[in-house]
Length: 252
Image 1: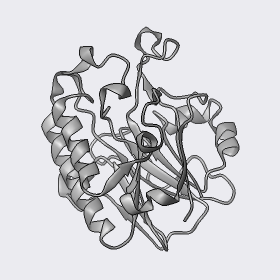
Image 2: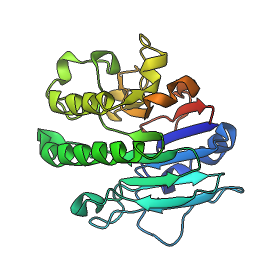
Image 3: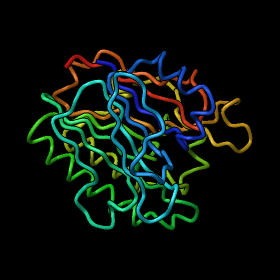
């Protein structure tokens, strides 16, 4: 089974680029999409043949945040959010239940300049971790998305310069460590322990051309699924966003 995750930084904008062709070439069985920036919860702008679409939008700010899932396989059930009140208002999490696993896509909050949303983000991450642990007691979990954290120094180009930057604070990194310590695995790093590869580049200073990037997009799976993982890759030859897609091939 081929799974793709992609922060598209506006679905409508990327549809005017090469996204349709890239999607057809990737041919995912399931795709998690983050930062859709949609404001319409009735009409999804991309409906490829053979796929069902599920999406959620921000209730607090029009055209902000948002996640979606495209799937060839009909889910048993769909759940939006984390059952956590205000932390569900920005359309950040979708869960699809399948016969043998849960597929969760998440767009974790950015702590922003001055770390003004760090506390909000930490609460969100704690609630997400608790939610995933609960799901994992029922079926194995596959989490994908823009988790907005570079976990280790290998995961960004300039770690020393970014120790107080959103996405690389010790608080955010520790939160991700807690998730892994709860019975989950970062699939790319597990399969590529020493590989330097990034999934996001700032639009500032032509960062992608110089590969001054961060690895902040992940497939994280229940530890017991690891023997079934065939491939975990970062598809940095695909453009259209400030992120690139990531791929997980897994036998399910």
